[in-house]
Image 1 (cartoon, rainbow, N blue to C red):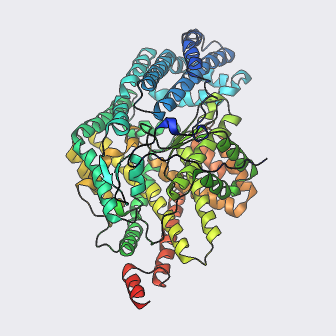
Image 2: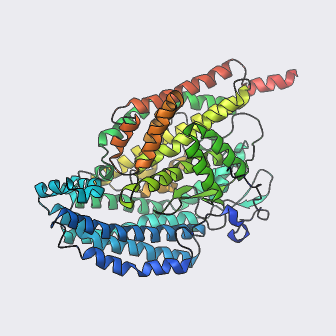
Image 3: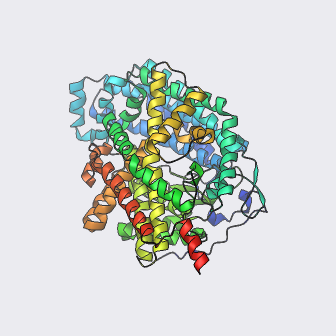
Length: 629
């Protein structure tokens, strides 16, 4: 039976103030009880960790005795990892509800320590498995007793050149607790300590400038507001640029040191190795996107003309190009819109997602101290959840569709796979999420038809803006990561000046047509994904694969839907490139990236035709029309 959406009753904070969590309705908060009923249940599970550690480490000397003995050891190890992961996930989600709350931060620190200790205890596992003679291990893989762990053990065998002795592995596990310091410090600064100050909004009301409000203001038609909001936010980062450069540089050095400790040729090779992604895939992406600079420049020039400005600034990239009023979407209205847009994915997908929305998968509203942005996360055996900071823009609607893709990937994978095979690498995760955005775009284009050029133009603009942000900008950030790590590997320091200079150079190469100044060049300092090295390229490959899969589903129907759902259900049970090939996408070739870039070019060309036809007048034409009529 379909679940009817409840009316939107989002509370409003006082003028210029932030909403506090105690004023949010329960149905607009996520439900974490499938993980733990309460803090006492979490404490009880945490108390089980020593026994789980003892059980797992008790197999240290028997890994090579037989296939059955190895399977038993892996059973105990996975029980420990599953519990530690659930403890950490719950603690991190509770922390993100209010990053200023000491009890939540303390629980997270305790959970992080538990996971670090668990991995330290299990440090014997890989070297112990690799100590089994290769021919004996190969024979184990053919034994039915080890069937459920075939991919896990095969993947460990692939790591043979980069696994160290048990003693060194234990040290590396301990270092992991220190290695997270740069990212944790940046997270504390970015979510709790950074102060953007107060700013007069479009109505002249002075408000606290938050991450969420900044995001909304970047979509304002008021260029002065966009300029002031961008200056306030980027100015706050620039004020701390030397400290942030030290954090950033420390994170990069950590990546380089750990890569060398495991015998990799570089930090990028180390980051790509777990998912078995060749560096050539990364380079192919950067080469293809860099070559698309002229198309991006055409779009930026079109945007500049339609905004009626002499130069296009960074804060103009998301400004509306047409004069229609910005529409506000209620959260529950957005839920229905997303579900309608995803109907090509079949009845089961839509029904399961509808149930998830009704079951409080989503933490909806921005509240004081809440982590910024949006994400989906989950613990095995519990419902996935989504963090949002709802402002009611169409961007929020697309973000909801995006995060729903992550959540549904988790849902399908958890349902079909055991713990050790469910968790998929991010190179696959970003496909599920961006495919949802593609289908939502197509749904909206089909809904309005071709008889309303103004609305159609707005949706085409959104598609190009999203594609440029997801494919082009993320490729630029990926190139920035490549070069910062190359600098450190060559012994060059990452000073604030160097980071500013490099970011400016890359922005000019990948995003021609944007003006540069000190505030645009400091934008390296506010990107949290840089603390999870070589992550962002997967947004770009994800969009490329998503467009290919969406086209196949649109054109081939049910067989393509079945292949896509099989991809989701496969989780992390095989190498991602192999899983993608089964679904019909080959990322070892430039074809998916070039197809996505061609889709951008076709959309820009349609926008240019609409402008050339007069259906979308440029500012001087609007003035002439007003004068005539």
